Length: 156
Image 1 (cartoon, rainbow, N blue to C red):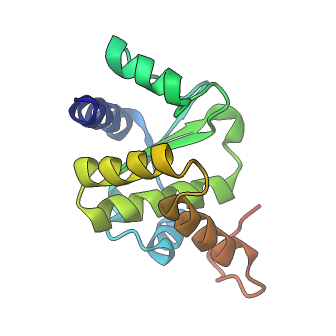
Image 2 (cartoon, rainbow, N blue to C red):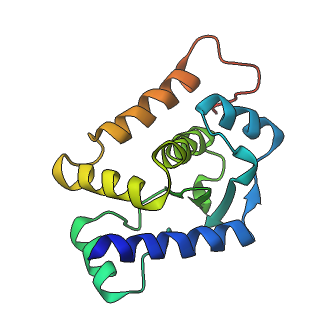
């Protein structure tokens, strides 16, 4: 019952970000390709004071119960739309991490398959130990933590 609501909310928030967000810089377009994003030109970033929580009472209750989103959440990827908390604007590492989730959305085929798997992992294994989260953490560390960063990547 909650998955369709979550997908509907995610799609509407993605549309909001795509309409009002900022395109990736040329440098970040290259980094997004390095991360594995197939269509980085579609990605938009929207800087917000706080990551939004769904208005729908049932979905909001589930989010609050699971603590999936909280006031301290720094970023949220909804396929090609990425919310970034405004005070994290200069955290390139976090943007790279979120781009890793965009690549997962592409690979898995959209909202329903991504959210089904990601939420299941979060509920059964726990964030941030989920395989999907660990994949993105390792990818970000490889890109930002490597001694030989590509010229196009500046992680600080």
